[in-house]
Image (cartoon, rainbow, N blue to C red; front, side, top):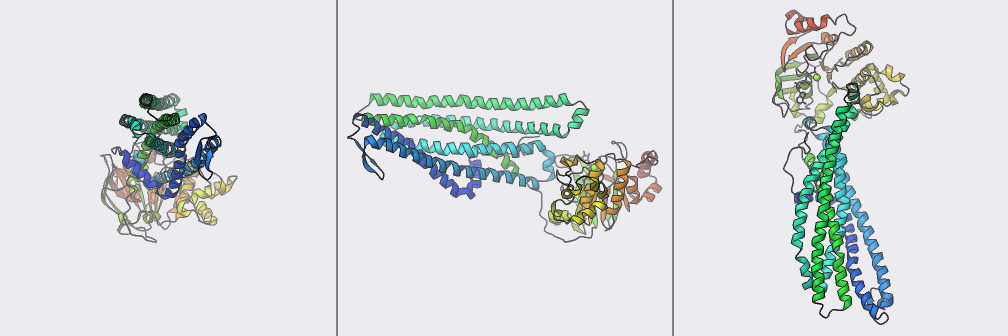
Length: 611
Ligand code: ATP
Ligand code: MG
């Protein structure tokens, strides 16, 4: 899986900054307050330098010299200097608090907004996006990459504003004291800016790689955690351990590489700054002129205060680039096209008539046609069974009706209207779907049945749905009944119980169209019987498309569509198809012969059999 979604060209820094700034807009007032705080803070640095001038001048004559202080007026240096120091420190404290606190509010708000936007985009992205991006990478984007932006938005922004302003004010003070001398320092600026530019580029690309590596790490870990049973029963421990080691080692290496860049960059920059300082000192000593010792000390002190904030600024550049790389991947996802939802039609209730006309489909990004010229009609209330080999396209066909994928040619009509003309939300309201792999949430049974739009359904209705799905019996036997937690994806339940919960959920939705993709996993006879009974109940009074593996289900269907390699090769009911003595009859004889006296009358198989 790729680390950045669509391989877009990297966004330019300026564009990224501007876009991030757009997220700051709602917090502009806090931002202004914090900026004001940091201005207060940064102003204290030249003040300290200036105070030194009074101190040095005062050393000669503490009682006679005077300084002007706000509020207190002219005051002897003996008292003035210490008082001024206290005043400056208090001032600095206020500035530091205002700046730090309000900037944190801005940046944490920004991060929160980004995280929410990222999560919401997940709810709107088309199926295709999830096919192409491993969940580990998507999760790592929400957890790790967002943290990188937090780093940039909190610490880095703080240092940037605070130290940046400090540098500016110190520089201003120096210019004011002696602009000619100070211009010597200006000469090194181009060198510094060149270094910053080169380093930033490397930081960004290295950080992008680190974030990709982190995604891979999450991906391997989550796969192993989810598949721990398979890992253990097939002896995959070594393979997984090596895979994880590789991902982790890769991550460590990339981090080290980045550290190497930043660790060599800081001393280099320091060297350049101090070269400027050295030159300055040389000039000061050489051209001392008529300045007082106090002036000179203050000047050199102010100049000496410069390298520290410059160093901090340079160190923070790697954090900023990490954040920008994180923001880049976040914006990449936010820029993905959401599911196409251009339809405008909304219906309260549909009858459930389905017309599929010349439907063909190829999964995006592949070139194998999975559905080829499919046509059929289902009258309201009828039940259609799709049967065919594994991989013949049954689930794909089922996924196209609620528009989980965009079909390429042909039409699907619901009540005579193209499904593309319905608003997606509305279309999906009319369809209850039981997928091949049951999805349960780590919540109570009650909340799993009454999920989503159904969340506010009264308890009695939930219980009725559970009873109709033949689930009530096992639920009531659980120690906490409907309040029992089912574990992650329902691990605390049996396969048959999970399926019955999924059916109960579909029943509760009471949609006119039911699509049921039966699981192929083996069930015990008892569960089989229950599920069969539940299905008989479910299909009453609604249009049903069932992808069937059980003979008992298939026999009851009004119409059986036999699929092979994306095409409908035969159609008719059970009797007709047997009489036709074609594809269906052949498969029936092959696969049912040995099953018909078995306990569970199933059509199941691994690829070559009839599923
Ligand atoms: P089964 O009975 O085993 O569930 P099926 O008839 O439901 O099989 P589909 O899941 O529709 O089969 O798959 C049909 C074909 O489409 C297969 O060849 C499969 O490789 C391919 N396919 C399925 N899902 C995707 C996807 N998300 N992206 C690309 N190809 C896919
Ligand atoms: Mg399938």
